[in-house]
Image (cartoon, rainbow, N blue to C red; front, side):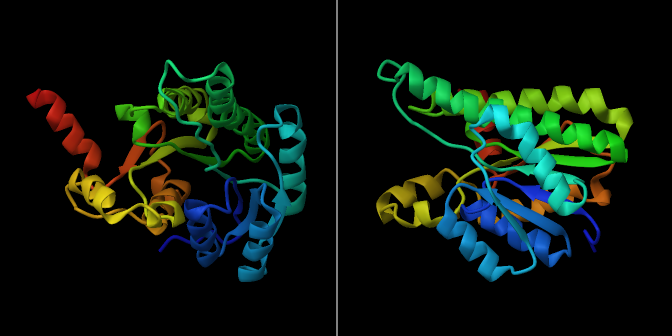
Length: 252
């Protein structure tokens, strides 16, 4: 059984559906967790639900403050062993209608902030000669999607960046991997009308949406010593959707 006792874990984007599942999972496995996000109300609720976790409000778009943020995290946790980069945004639009700011902001936050968080965390991990980083990407980073050229580029970029960093630090006992969710059941998907939801699930071989717990289980595995010989990889959590998409391309 995986046990994160004495392991210090930072989870970004902790207030969303997947983020909350991540917090729940790592707490259940005895980790010392610091959760971050930008919504005070949701952060307070997390603290209420998990009284033993640390909370630190931070906007990852503030690039100049990321190194200081990681210092604060390390100080609160007395170290940093595991980083889960889950935070991100989307600003969808067709390419000809997409504003420069919509492109830049999504790339800057999803890709730029993730890189800077990795870089600052790795500095801490090098001192400890141990580290696990898991970056949450998306199936869209592999397949592309209508109206999401910025989002798809940012997620594909994370995958390439993760592979490069994994090579750089493989000999330092620091692993970096990605988890790529497909359609995951969250409060957002609950609001989708049933006819559209039926179309979405029809594209998934397992004929159902995933859950935040499905993603969290995979992140926990990659963060554990059970995955110590895995680095630079991406695990798909999408009910076979990516596999089916690849088959369609081959047939086409």
